Length: 338
Ligand code: IPE
Ligand code: IPE
Ligand code: MG
Ligand code: MG
Ligand code: MG
Image (cartoon, rainbow, N blue to C red; front, side):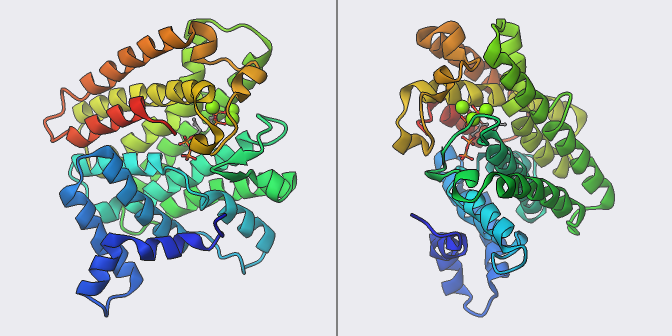
């Protein structure tokens, strides 16, 4: 089992960072992280490779932004680090980086917003697992926050992560004040209600006790999962200074990608192992969740997956940019096994 102090160590083990350290041994760790951004930018068009490089960078940056366990209140900070540094895919921050880079943004300008998205996402997972919500005991391969600590600490850890996310953007001096406000609005809408993640989670819980139509299921998925994924891509595009047409294409792409992501999440709950998932499979059926496999069956869900995957890729057509990485991300999400 990993320790909460692991991310900094993991970042130092990263081969890009090691390479940079060898090139310029006198540089501080912060500078190494910044220089590494350009390594990512110049090479990756394969989603798997890109996500792997992003993970180390995001973890190193998050480690700088999150209070240490030794700072008071230690229990809340330990709980935040327990959940945040447990080995998530870092998909939302990676998508923000990929979209921003595709549209010409500098990686340094994207990093803080990317970390903010991961903070909001991890907060949503901590609360999603609470006994009053999905009541899950395993997350990212380790006991959930409320199991390891207690319900009150898990609630506070989630609350704190949400506040830290907005603080991170508001204090990002690389971006103009106007841009920061735009990002705060974008993420607040996506995280909250009536169009965001909180609204989706409320509908998801409500749907446990009743039948939902196909259209309702799609609405739930767009809100509970799609909204943050769409915000990740849009924030990348906004930081890059995308025009209205580009932003529209990115929004269409990421709206479909968000749906694709939750359909695969639903499928994996039926087909994957706890070892692959890092969470307990089979929970959706036991909790009578509204999911694609529950409503359509496995085979028809695979057919839907193909339709949404095609729509995701087609949405990139209007972009006169190198979109291979964004296309590869769509393929990666369709085919993912964890
Ligand atoms: C799980 O998200 C929750 C959903 C919105 C489906 P991820 O599958 O991205 O979880 P981590 O971040 O990799 O743990
Ligand atoms: C979660 O959907 C969406 C969130 C906002 C966290 P799920 O409840 O299906 O996510 P998992 O399967 O627990 O990760
Ligand atoms: Mg849930
Ligand atoms: Mg859940
Ligand atoms: Mg799920």
